[in-house]
Amino acid sequence: MSVAALDTHPVPACVRSARESFSAVPTAAWDGLETGEVRRLIGELSRLESQVAAHKMAAARVLEKARKAAANGDGPRPGTGTSTGATISFDFGGDRNGADALVNTAQRIEEQTTLIENALAAGVISTKQADLISRALAKLPDDVTAEQRERCEETLLKDAQKLTLKDLRRRAARITEAYRKTVDEVDADEDEILRKKEEAARAKTSFSMWDNNDGTVTGRFTLPEAQGAMLKTALDALAAPHQKVGTVNAATGQMDEIGFGQTYPQRLGHAFATLIEHLPADQLPSNGGVSAVVTVNLDLDTLMGDIKAAGLSDGTRISAGEARRLACSAQIVPMVLNGKPLPLDLGSANRYFNQASRRAMEKRDRGCTTPGCDRDARWTEAHHLNPYAISKTTDIRDGALLCPFHHHRAHDQGWIGRINPDDGHVEWKLPGSDAWQRNHRWRP
Ligand SMILES: [Zn+2]
Ligand SMILES: [Zn+2]
Image (tube, rainbow, N blue to C red; front, side):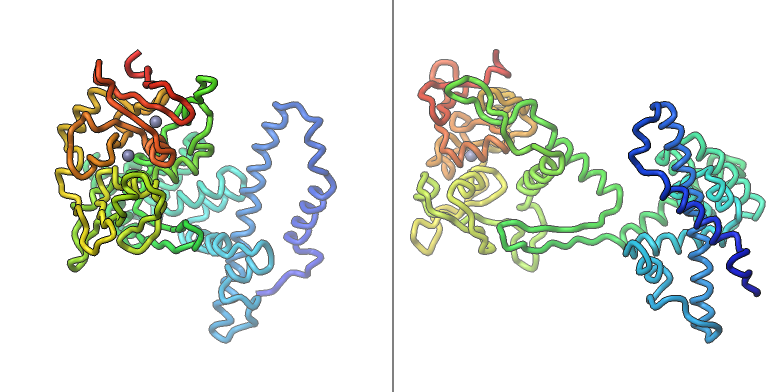
């Protein structure tokens, strides 16, 4: 194959003039334009991005072919990278994953037809749409003919003009309806596609976490999308924003607008921690005789209010307040050691507020009992008003519902609570106040 002389080849001239055109206009120049015109131009820039991407894909294919030829001892090796993606990312940007994806998409599209590439090069579809359509085509059943494949491709390219990316993905999952005769066949095709996708997702599933040595751990996971959606739904529910987070300020009577939820990721993080504390650990399979239940080891003095750190059964050290809060929640078993080698209390099942007493408390309290809090009962924990009773009773006259945020507060600050002797409702003496207060949100 002959290579055209550089000065007459159209590609260098095109790239040079595009670069020069953009270099000549400062970004500040956008300020003088009408918004309608700006919108139109942003659309045009997006189309330009597609066109540039089509050319990058074509370029990536040239490099990939040269690399393969070099591997067969035929011609020089392009670049020093271990792959075409590595070479491209080395030359600019350093984005190895992005460059690999570009090479993969370029090859997948080339193996299919020229329609997708033409649409991209004409700025009619975006790179994400091109990638989605080419993936859908690659997943067509084995018995598809060339003509049927083309009909699917044309349909998806047309749909891409009017559908969101999410809807296009759904449409692509049922694209065989472009040529199948019955709905049953399309259903079967879609099911087959989904089955393969789920199998691939299970193979990619992983979880890892590591200790940051600063009191936190960081983790990373890959989950099948169904379980991902379940996790997201649970976290979103737990992270539902408080209209008001915080505690009533005794002096002003106003809520302190502080709390655990400044940003959405932070709220999700706290929701994740709450979710973990609510796992039914005692129902999980034990690991070779090792229980899945983490126990809190603490002295009776700590339980009663002393400031003396405690430990979890895996050796993790926690503060006295945190130990008391965990001992209060149903899922963690407190081992009250009291300076002796044998624990006083192994946390028998009836220590916890059982389902009946929990339901009775929900009926009585209706939500977090902290004055001003708007968390309803679904997202609360049962707190023992009398720490002595933790190991002795499941009587609801000893319990009060608190949301996780206020449960932390109650133990950190040593809140004093009681059941009002006259009407049987929960009241608190919050720090800095001598008056009994209650949450009137649920019982005005
Ligand atoms: Zn508690
Ligand atoms: Zn609350």
